[in-house]
Image (cartoon, rainbow, N blue to C red):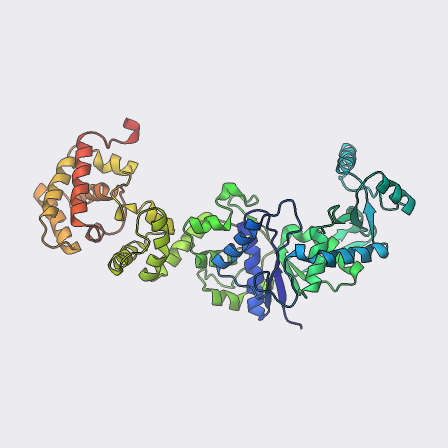
Length: 496
């Protein structure tokens, strides 16, 4: 068998969504498992929707997930160029080849005429498709239409009898009736090829052995196989990946959460966790193990183990897996990952001293068991970095709105201010000592203290948390909260 060669060929017409990344990952995994080549090709033949910025987004998304490529626009390779708009002469020469063989023809129908005919077909209960109006024009008729100022696209003559059989590695054997498809445009009036022609020619020119793409492209494969036959091209093996659905089992969309790959990074997901999560969408490793390092996934991966059934992109599952990766991460590495989020939020300096960085490592070590996304440090846990935090509704309702809370907080502030040593053991002794003096359970002091100092009702060990804050800050937060509570300013929202 020849060397395995696969390609990821996105169109730079917008942002790179999670479905694109899923397809790229499965191509990459197959190439790495087989010791083959992973090719990046930019399919920019949609000249109307093309944006240069979108190309950078593609690079950024792939690199974020840890996917490298062996050939591509930025690094070159033996079968370049790897941007389709730079290969127009090749496509046009193949179009001329098809025209000369009578396997393609000029079509002069205007968009308005095509739409009128489609509406007529719908009115008759027929599927709207091209009716072959220009399929058999004489040269004189074509000359007359050109003289009228009409421009032409090029259509490929599809087979009208028989069946096209697709032998798909994942979906199995799929059979299409040739009479149900219409002659397809392969070159637009602009001279640019359509997706169908360009990908078929490029896959052959770049010696792609396996086309691994989303199942939405399965119907296109009928046309691609016919184009390959007409051009004398040996078809690659096809593997169409199952749909990725939202939790409601509808096609993944914005309402299911962020769609752009960049957004997941901004939301605090780790690339290694997303790599693991996406790999399990439509592929089974063969056991119940879910947390798998990249090298293990590469070792086990196969197209035969991919499911033909849709998979569900469950954000809760993704968040859980992200949390598992955070738990397993060394505190020093976690601090390095968290730092950019804190800097962007204005909560930490961009170039911290070794002492400050060591402190951040301690914060991360304390918090990592409870954190599922890196953004937690700038939202729920922002109390580590600033006195400006919100008091949660539950904290107000359960602890801060009690009549005895202001007095407790003032008494605790006084005790903590007098501590000679600021460590978890000394803080715990002071808190429990106050509870004993008041004749209440320790929780009756611990919980109001947490609510006052952090604005929340849950979190890591209170005494170790307080140890990481400045003694003076803790005292001032207790007194500030006591004053707000005494003035009725911390009543739950529904009470006004």
